Image (cartoon, rainbow, N blue to C red):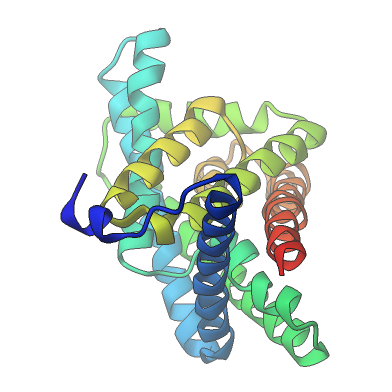
Amino acid sequence: MSATDESIPRPQGGKANGKRQNTQAAAVHETIRAQGEQELRRTAPALLWSAIAAGMSMSFSMLAIGLLKAHLPDNDTGLLISSFGYTIGFMVIIFARQQLFTENTVTAVLPLMSEPRLFKLLYLLRLWSVVLIGNLIGVAISAYVILSMPLFDAQTHGVFIALGEKVMSNDPGQMFAKGVIAGWMIATMVWLIPAAGHAKIWVILIITYLIGLGGFTHIVVGSTEVLYLVFDGKASLGDYLMSFALPTLLGNVVGGTFIFALISHAQIRSDK
């Protein structure tokens, strides 16, 4: 236990401990709500450029998974190790403070839930639209560049194709259901980070690793892999939009906003 931890008063008894836990939860809620207020006030160009950068950074996840798979056996051990590659893009985006759509399903929603106003709803829709478009532009650029430039051998190219085909093996119902879990887990990560302190990297690593290992669908990560298929001619743009993007996007929003954010806000509101 650190000196800082020892300086924190330790209330005795169940009621005191419960009050302290409620206070800590409220502090996390307020931190995320304040961050959301700042995001809602940012200009559209600033949001767009940050979102494009995030989309391009997210391609590191596909690159890391593909490169690891290309040098690992195709078995359970290879899967367990290569899934760590999924975490790379998220760590880059979070530490670089770039705009990722699924983070905003919690952060930017809490201000609206705390003070429901039409203008806040409009700001939220503007934020979601700009960030999502920017993220998809970024992943499209990355997928095209990775495919077009002479960067990797045929074996690694085949691994990237296999990643996209694995995502597209899900039907729309599975895309939605797995998207709900992914959105919920990303929202959980956003909620934990303010209280994580120096353990922030472990929170990001563990949660995003589980998303990758479980094959849960994420609108930005998955778009890199599926658009790689589209640009290679192995899938159509219609397949991408109807079979992957729409059900996954809906699932991510439901999991992040209507399940996690709503329940977390309801907890704090009930305590108050």
